[in-house]
Picture 1 (cartoon, rainbow, N blue to C red):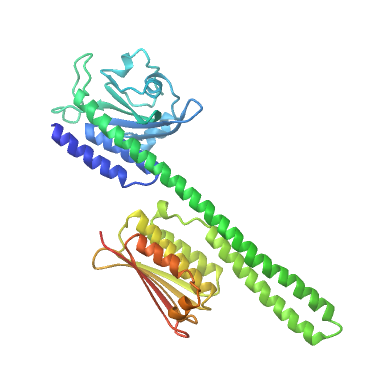
Picture 2: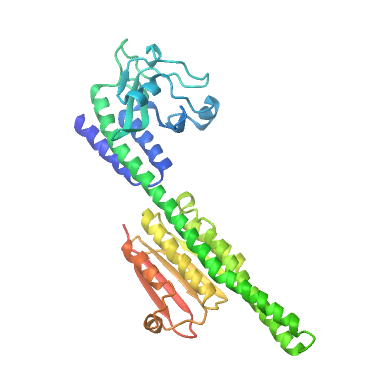
Length: 387
């Protein structure tokens, strides 16, 4: 039994560590705990600093039941004890515990109870609890436990404690990942703000000076004034392009929520609307990739599209994402623009984002290939290995 339980804990730990978003980690912890100990209900509450719960994730309760239960619980009764004392709680009937304070009318009926704090050092990250353990031979109904004897055993408590220790690590890692992502987004927005100032502000300044020159020449030298006005129109168009590009970059790609294919498709659709060029996207048979690989594919695609639309003077850009024979993925961004000599670009010290794209590819085991020549367009291909 213990060997089987440890194998199940190992499976649960692997499932938790595959997730990088806090909400997904919480849900995986709760689901894994419920399946591990064969309980009817499981929940995990993450405390806030105001006497309530910032998050409360449940498993075994339908969405309809959860809506009927109402607001998140406060930190009271047995939940408060778990958070404040940071000790396991194993009860034959939670309703007979002196700390029990009742529950909303729509709440499921809970009897036997096993609670475990999720702790990182001295910080209590949450309270994990299970209720109504199913008993062998009970068919669809729970067997009745002897009075004052919890259906949860000491072995169950030990297994849940082991799971909670690893849950704390997974939860802490997910929080660090989200914090790192927030910092990355902040840094990216700062970069875009600087680009906006350097590029658009300068163009607007030139636009102002050129329009003033045209106004001064309109009576004295109409021909020169006409030329200045053509320059005003060109500068205004460039400034509009810079603004559109900045707005596109500020839009968050919903990679974590919607997946790589949906995020790429949405990004391409925005670019298609924002630019005169035709931008298309196709995808065939792509499976879910590890999160770092999906992030790399999205960023390489964004950089390649940025180059095609702002530097290549292309009127058609095609983005294709396909599954490889090895089970990985291949991204191709192809344009019909002016093209360039990759060797000349490197010798001249210009990068067009090639260094960044190469670094992203290498960082996740991918291979980047750049094919281009003056007058023949450009193709950027990124191939990800299969898992």
